[in-house]
Length: 184
Image (tube, rainbow, N blue to C red; front, side, top):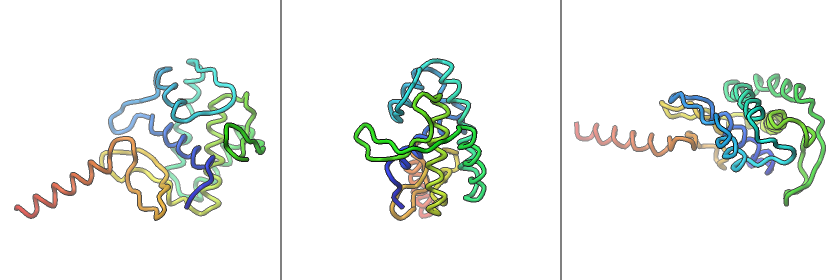
């Protein structure tokens, strides 16, 4: 399933943000204004961005809400998404900017960044739910990782996140186990 550009971009931004939460290694990777700038560099947003400690704190606070979207099934996501849209006072409107064709924004450009991030993610999950593609919303299959991702591959076969080189690591482990069984 191929999602429209803004849906895919917002799903990637949401998973990136969730993956800054402490995981198996207990490292929070969104603690400094420099980390915040890195997030914005990879996941650009339009509108007012203050780039200060208060805005960073607010963005950090939405991560657990977004993480919940990876911990439920399609039906379980619906009330979470509706709550995010309601809390953000979403009012969808069509916009065109920065070389992107018509797409939807659901908050004003001067709404707090954390609100915009939450609402844009919720709108992206609306598309996933409506397309009946929620099985592409996944937690990494590596036994030592709880990173999240959305599988954008054509055949829906992606099993590992991109944050910890998990696919490579797990393939090497499997190879070593096969080799050990042959020599044993």
